[in-house]
Amino acid sequence: MPGTLPAPKLQPLPSLEPTAVTPVAPVVPAPAPPEPRPEAKPEPPPPPAVVAAEPHTLTPIAPSPSAPPAPSEGGAIPQGKGINYYLAQGHRLLDSKPEQALKFFAKAGEVDPGSPEPDSGRGLAYSNLERWGDAVAAFQASLHKNPEYTEAIMGLAEAYRAQGSVPNKRKALGLYQRYLDLTPDGADAPVAKAQVDILASDLKAAEGARSPAAAPPVNPETAPAAPANEEGAPAAAPPSREAAPTAPPSELPAPPPVLAPESPPKQNGP
Image 1 (cartoon, rainbow, N blue to C red):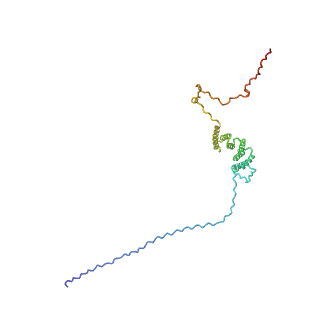
Image 2: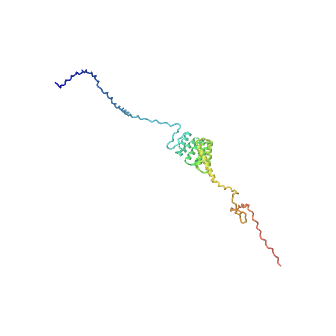
Image 3: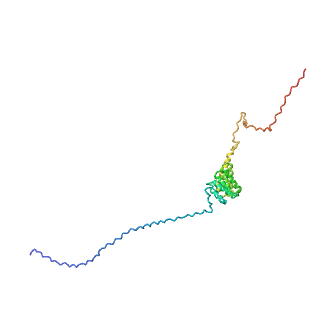
């Protein structure tokens, strides 16, 4: 039939071979890390069991052999002790109870009358009581037994200085110097040196206050001239107001003898 197009010839499609599909392994998610467990806190140890303490008896400590035992509260002086015991107790009580210290020093003097230490100790006790006269006598008694006992020398110097008068200061100065001559490196040497300087200055000032001030010398070249009188001659110095020295009665001249008046001559009659 005119105008009719021929039918296209269809070519057969090439056969498609089936493609082998490689199986894919399923993706397995990685396991999550385990969460950290909280550390367990250590449990506090149980409190110790309370055990009843057994009664403990304190053992008294024996006093040291070097430290003498203290006297009784009543102030009684123990008997039968040595001189060192009484001296130690006296020095221990010097500052707190000087009256009680006097008793111990007196007891030490009874034990050893020839020792200078008890008398010096009494002097120290009297000084603490400010009984300077008794202190001086006690120190002098100690130095009578031993003139070179430095404790008594220093104590006597302090007792003289405390009294304050010029004669006592002179005595104290000599005693301080004597202490330094005997023990220049002694325990009380710094105090003695300081007092020597102080007392020397005080005594010098006291001597200067006593001596009258000397008049300054007069230079004749610069001295003012005496005023002249009317005639031109220098005026005479005014008479001194001081009374002229009188001789003792034994040296005065004897008064002239008193003569009787002569009687007129008698006239003869006519």
